[in-house]
Image 1: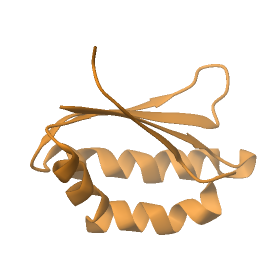
Image 2 (image 1 turned 90 degrees about the vertical axis):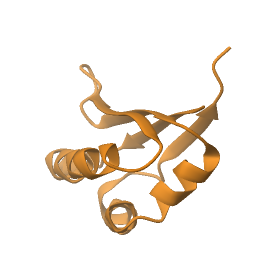
Image 3 (image 1 turned 120 degrees about the horizontal axis):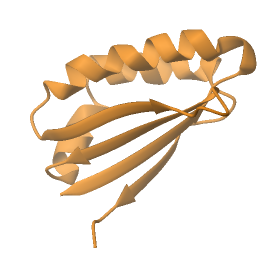
Length: 94
């Protein structure tokens, strides 16, 4: 299994729009083959910070996710919404 934490920092004037676009990723991703967990979180103290905590059956399943239309749509929109590119950590459970 592959664990992923993805961090996004929204521009201050784009927080609600970012939240809407990120939320739209959740349902279609849950339906993807190999998706075990895909949760969107927002920081209580810093609402511009968003995190996905994900678990995938394999790297191949994550790669397939990254090629889906809904993810590619997010990637394009993120250029306008985020302060910097999404930070992604690929992890293994110990």
